[in-house]
Structure formats: structure tokens, C-alpha cells
Image (cartoon, rainbow over all chains, first blue to last red; front, side, top):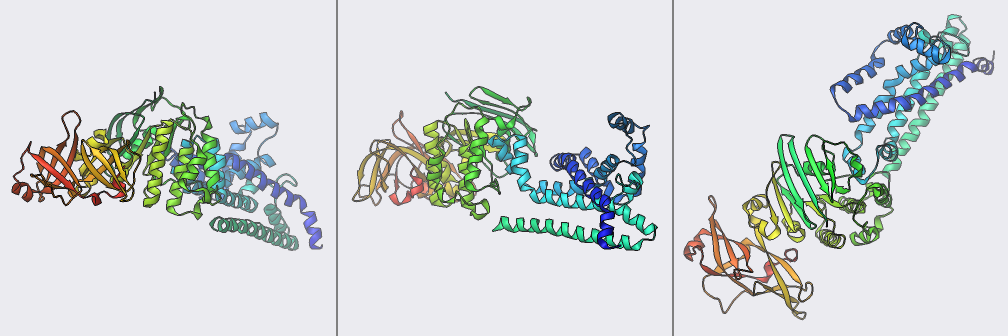
Length: 231
Length: 367
């Protein structure tokens, strides 16, 4: 088989991977951004505890999170029941379940860079803008969003890349269902298991090139922005 | 009628606050040592300090720290100390952001003429520049302009002139006076500089460890020891008010009458008939018991000694002299050596002549 034929055959997995990463990042923007704001601006014991909880995916083996997610996704649990009520499907071994799992394990990759970036914004400036009459939403959209552009970009790169690269949790929560949960990393594992090294080679190389390309483009924009601001 | 009253109580960062003041429509200076709680007072009035109990009444609008309200709606514009400009907006956008956002504030005062402020501060050439292209002084001017663009009934400026040179300071001082007069918006300034205080304030509040130790109008406050304690004995001085009665343009002098005594000011100031204030440094003055007809100095005042205060650990004494008749008198603070005091045998109620050269009035001492 030629390289082109292998990539065409694996196209559903490639598309599924990109879809999963983009949808995950979209939800992380909605969920992770308020959390980053909360952790950056409200320092208390409870929030420090929250901060440690949200960082757990960085230190725990993916199997631990995967195992508990499977337990919580069980149709007998509240979450499981609620989801069945909502969609008629169960969470485990579905794309939706995979999205939810991805949001959870990529959360620290979204929160931490953004939180650092928000904390760097001078609080006196926020005060001055509030005094001018800016509402909270105006401060977010007109001051924080443009000032934390780099933070958002870094959060996006890391979460996107990490979702593409995750394997353990995806395997446990999603399994290997073609077109539903069979993402690139699973596909490579599957090919190796079946001793089709040529396919594994092509996909792995594709992933390396793709990831390098994405990271380079985003870091390039990021550095250009940083230089642009100074001149 | 503008009426602003502020009441702040409670404990914050190891200080126990007890601040109660009614502001008149003039310019008030808040003076105090570093760490006396000045900036906390500013934070409290503007609503950012939630630990202290505060009640701020602005023309009948009451803002109570115990009743949650939107801070951004308070009709107060504040220039916080060292506040940065919005980095991704140029100077023009920074100013128009303040103009646009403050529209939601409900105020009784007329909005200020921002074009005129931009012209007066001389920042019209900076409008297209970004904050990181400006010097420290330029940033402060833009920040001041941005603060004045905010629609408000009360203006608070926390050290607004700390990075400015003498020329710009003079511009800012006269602009603030002009705004205060024209729009009748009360202004509260936090400052350490005696020149700034003398030139601009109508009233002075002295703050120590969160409490008002004394407050009063400018000429009163210059004589109290709390004031001297903060500004230093070297700067101790008094403010006298006079009326311009003659000008000699070929000699470039302005003659004024202070409680009936003629004083010569170097330079051309104001118009004939207008009131003027001069600051006389306590250490610049000579005294004599006899009239000095062949005077080596242009200026002579005559008065009687009201109070003599010897300083414990220095060679100096401070004298307070009452000048003018009993209805229309002014007080002058002078500082001489204890040695001279003994040599001239000066006692309380003695009549003495006070002499000083016109060169002791630098431009900043004439208000």
C-alpha cells in the first residue's frame, strides 16, 4: 500500500482526532476560562484546594482517571443516568464520553497557562478600568482577553496537542470503535498489535509532522506578537 | 450645592482607621507619612476596599460599604498611584475608553472639555503613540487626562505629579485649579510636596496611622506642628494673602499689600486688584526690634510675637508673629537661633520688624 492509500484508509481516525481536539478546546474555553479567572483573582483555602484537584491529571497515571471516569460513566450513577435521560445513550465508549474525558484530563493544560497570564495583568489597571465605569464583561473582553492573548494561545496549543496525544484514558473510556472512538493514537496501537508496522510508521510520522507543524505555526505567531508589542 | 462627606472606620493592614470629613467644593490635600493609610482611604472612597466600613455621600447619593453596589457606577474618578495605561490601546483610545465607559455613571456635574485638557497638558502629539513608547512623565500626563475624562462628581488624584518636571507640574497645577473653579468639582489630592500643596490646596487634611490628626485651611495648617513634622523643618513656612495694587513692568515687579504692608514680588503676576498668596519660608526671615529706615531689604512687615517655641535638640526657636490689626490679621512663622532670640531679648507680645528679600520668593512660592 502506498502512503496515500494508508492515510486515506485512516482518514476517519484522523478526522475524529481533530474533531475531538477542537471540540475539547471549545468546551475548555467555556469551562476552563472562568476557573482560571477564579483561581487568579480569589485566593483562599478552598480555591487552593480546587487548584490541586484541577492539577491532578498532570500527576496521576491516566489509568487512574480512566478507571474512575468509567465508574462514573456507568448508567447506574447519577451522571450516567442524567446522560441517558438527555441523549438516550450511555457515556462510556461513545464520542460524547470521550469529549467529557478529554475536557477533564486537559483541564490543567488550559487553566495553568491562562491563570499565570491573568495573574500578570496589573490589578491596579483593572481597578482603574472599573473606576472608569467598565463592567465585569467589558473588563474581560476589552482588557483581559487582548492582554492575555498569549496565555489563551498557549492554553489552546497545550490542550489541543495534549488531546491529540492522549492514549491511556482514551483507550479505557472510549475503547476502539471505528468512526466513534478510534482516534489516531488508538489506531497506531492497533496497527502495532496486528503487526502492520508500515501503517503504524506512516501514522506515527504523520502525527510527528502534524504536531511539529501546529506547534511551530502557533509559537511563530506567539513570538511575532511578542516582538510586535515591543516595537 | 455640592456636598461630599466620607466616613471610614475599621482595621486594615495593622492600622485602625477613623476618618470623617466633609469636603467643600475646593481642592483638598491629604497629607501623611508613608504608611499612614492615604492610599487605603482612596481605595475605600472608590469602593475597592471591602474590609473597612465606609459611608460615602456624594450630593445625596449614599454608598455604604455594607450594602453591595456596583463599584463602577460610583460618580468618582480616581487616578491611582502608578496605574498603568491599557497597553494595547494608544493614547487616544485610552482616553476615549474612559470617556465611553463613564457614560453609565449618573452625575450632577457637567462633563469636562477633554479636547481642552489634551491641549493644556500638551499631549496632543502623543495621541497615536502606545503606552510603551512613552516616558514616565508622559504616561502620568496621559493618565491624568484619562482620569479627568471620566464623568464624575468627585476627583481623587493619588500623587498625580510625582514623575513630572517643574514646567509640567505648573501646567497641571493651573489646569486643576481651572477645572475646580469652572466645573465646581471637588478635588482630593494626595501629595508630599510643600510647593504643590501651597500652590493648589484650599484645605489640608493631615493623616497619621489612619486617623485625621488635624485639618484646616492652607494658612492655618502651615503653622501647626503636625504639618512641619511631615514636610520637615527645612520647609516650614507660612502663607500670607495680599492684594496686588501696583505693577512696574520696566523693573518687572508686582507690588502687593499684605495686611497694610507693601511687599515687592519679582515678576509680573495676575492683575491689579486681584488676590495673591505668597509662601514665606520661616528660615528666610530676619527680625529686628527697631525700625530700619535705610533698609537693605525691600520688604518689611510689623507685628507682635504671639508664641515662642524653643526646639529641644537644635539651636533654633520658632516664633509665631501676628501681623495686621485685630480684625484682619495673618500669622507668620519664623525660625531664628536661640542665640539671636536671647541677644535681642525677644519676649511674648513684643513688637518686632520682619525683613526679607524679594529674592526669597521663587516662582513657585507665589500663588
